[in-house]
Length: 276
Image (spheres, rainbow, N blue to C red):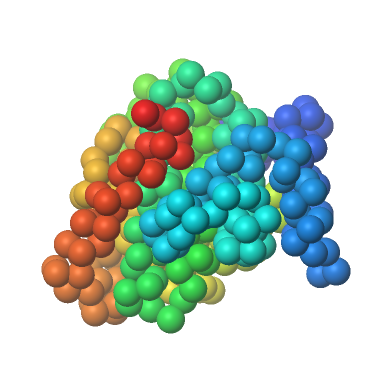
C-alpha cells in the first residue's frame, strides 16, 4: 500500500455519504462571516448527541462555569464559534467512524481530550496563544489514527501500543497518521493552524508556520503519556520536547501543576466519553 491509496480513501468519504449532513451545515455556517450564533444554534439543537456534549464541555471546571450552563445557547456564547466548530467536527467524525460500544475508540477519544486539556493548560501558563486555539488542535491531533483504525482496523490494531508506531504506519500504509490526519483536516476545511498541528505533532521542529501551536500540542501529547499512560497514546518523549520546555520556561513544578489539574478533570473526561 502507498500513501496515495490512503489519501484517495479519505477523499472518497464524501462520495460514500459518510460525512453527516449536520457536519456540512456546521462547516457552512462557521465559514460564513455573515452567520450568527442563532444559525449555529438552529443546527446543533437538532442533534441531541452534539448538543449534550457541547453543554458538558461548557460546564467543565476548566472553563469556570461548572454546572452553570444549562442550554445550548449559553454554551455557544461561552465557548465561541471555533470551539463549537471543532467539538461538532470531532463528534461527527467520531460518529462517522465508530460504534458506541467500541471501547478502543472511546479510549482513543479520552486520550485526545486529555491532550486538548493539557494543551490549553500549557498555553494558559506559558504562552500568549489562546488556550481555546490549542484545545481545538489537541482535540483533533490524532484523527489520522482514527482514519487508519476505521479503514484498516485489523492491520492497525496489530501495531497499537508499539513505540515504533510511526515507522510501522509508514511501512504498512505508506504514510503516518499525522499526515493522514492532515489530509482529513484539509478535507474538513479546518484552519491552517489546526492542519499543521495535526501534521507536525510528532515533528514540531519541522513546522515552518504556527510553530508555537504545533509545539504546545506536541509537548501535550508527550505529557499525556507521562500523566496517563494507555495503549492509545503515542507521545514518545524526544529532544524536541526538552527544547520546548526550555522555550516555554516550564519548570518541574509547572508540569506537576498541569498533571494535578488534568487529574482533577478525570471524571469530566470519562463522563464526556461515556466511559463511566
